[in-house]
Image (tube, rainbow, N blue to C red; front, side, top):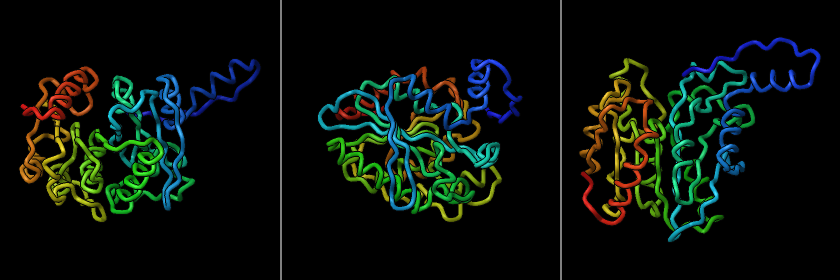
Length: 281
């Protein structure tokens, strides 16, 4: 999983060799951009009051004014520091892969300091660590999404969040009345439970999804957890799910990283049923 920045030998001779060498030295942000381009997505950079956000879009037209919004998970500070400047861009791009499978109009909303803007925005390690779900971060994400909704004409959103992106998704959904559904995958829904379980420093400065008011009944909630996930087991989310009056969907054979792409059809089918008013089992 970790992508290490290997030293590059000096390019000599053929231009083709130079190009190959440069490609081998590309950081996570550039690799993510290339994967998005290969998937046929366009991208723009939204400039908010404090942070920039890279936004990737597919070409599907809006249907019934509904926009799907994908949010990637956390990248650890240790991984980010493997590059200079630090680069917390996701190494595997799970949500990018799921968006590629989605047939609805969709965007991937980049998180602050991710996707090559760390230095541009004078980001600090705290933005990737203890303050990664701070009010400053969530307000910026919400502002970027509202700008995208206005530009695209979207009247409703369905938010998909993986891991820490699910934490942000829950926090954002409470600020966006146009949210029609929230779908989380292997999400951290309780900061205190997570840090106690991992024996890690508290997320001081971050908002805690466990403290978020219950979302309105009009918001369909689907929270998927891998049966084999030992990094973020469903037990950590029980109290938050009870507060949200939402149930966990336990997926056999899945851990934290693998293999969410394989069950995308099930995720999409359950979402469609929930949006149609059917009970989620």
